[in-house]
Image 1 (cartoon, rainbow, N blue to C red):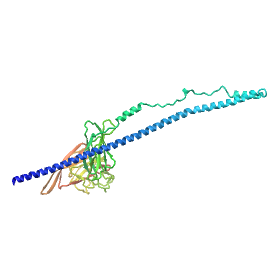
Image 2 (cartoon, rainbow, N blue to C red):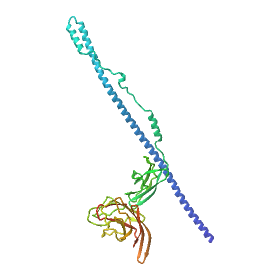
Image 3 (spheres, rainbow, N blue to C red):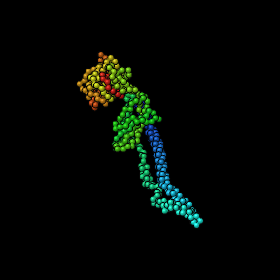
Length: 434
């Protein structure tokens, strides 16, 4: 029986190994199918892009040549008209002179034939001829003095155009930059990218996204950073992301990276409406302390901050600081207080003092200034229970102005999510949360 049991065990293990092997092979076949589809689809898209681009170029260049031809024809018409007009005027003057001379000849011949019979006619003719100024002739320009139109065409244009066209456009098989991480953020997605071509010197990056595969890509970020949080993302909806780069000193962008799908299931951070002393933006992620005399803590609409996330506050503008000011996170809401410097909360005041459960810590951060960014990061250190009940210890990191304060925060009861809040005693403070 022992031998049979061993054979059965080996057979079972072999079957399981074969099943795992088959599953892995199918997975790799699926990967090959996706790779083949990416090549074929990207090749088809590239062909379409090339056809459309060169068709657009043909249309544009043809129109430019037609427009230039019209302009040159108009110049020919204008020169011809302006040059012919004085010649026409001279011709009319000469034709008038010929007509006058013909009439004078006829009168002279009649006067000569009648000189013995009517000497007065001969006298009248002589006087008329003297007044006509038969020695004054209009000036006729010589051929070298009038325009002789011609078309000046540069034969090198086609050679230059041929040289540019022969080098226009490239087909790239691997973009120099690819997306390496898509991470959920409350109401947004953190996109991180990296260079895959180390020889490429990147100056700027351009990140785009779209809601569906049929929509149009929109610019989300252009700059030198290699990550960006795209906000105002609808929860549980797939978005496509792509990125490209631009080389140092160049104007054209590189080919796009392989599009990546990302989504977030986390609700956006929002301030809770209803307090008279704070004015909120339409998306409720920006709070402005107004001139109301009321003092109260402005909390988040819901407990949307979880362990492992980074909660970020950006102070756009500041007012007069007060030692009771606070920005931080807490367990539950307490509407009866005017500051987060209390139990079951951690916060930083406007002068940089850090408070844990209402107690001032020795280590401090720089005072908050316009443009300051304050971040909160937490991770679980321990979860234990004793005779008094369970408790939770969290490692908290608060960062501001390139400095950090790290401490352990003991919570009497485990808590899956936290509220965030702020309190300011003077007007002018404007805070964005994300």
